Length: 104
Image 1 (cartoon, helix red, strand yellow):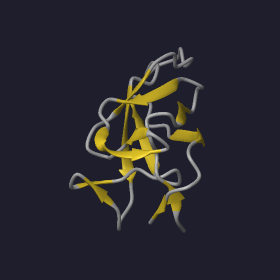
Image 2: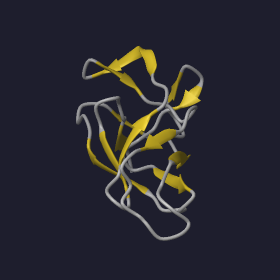
Image 3: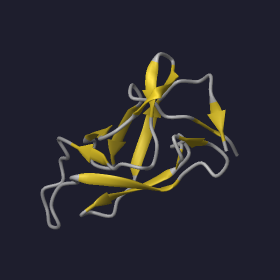
C-alpha cells in the first residue's frame, strides 16, 4: 500500500511523545516546498518522556522505507514506513505530512 513521502515539515514523534526531526534532508527534491527525507540519515528525538531504563529515545533509524522511490540514491521515507528508536527499540509515529505525493 502506498504511503505519503515525508518532508522536513512532517510531524513525527516517538512512542513517548518526543518530537523527532531528520538529521539530513535532500534539498534538491522539494515536497510542499520543503526538502524530502531519505533513509540515509537518522532522526533525532528531543523531549522523550520515558524516564525508566533504558532511558529516553535519542535517535531513530528507518528500517522499512520505499522500495520503488529513491531520492539522491537513497530510499525515500514514507508515512507508512517503520522506524526504530535507540535505545528503547520503540517505533516512530507519523501524525501529519503532506498529502499530494505518494510512493511505494
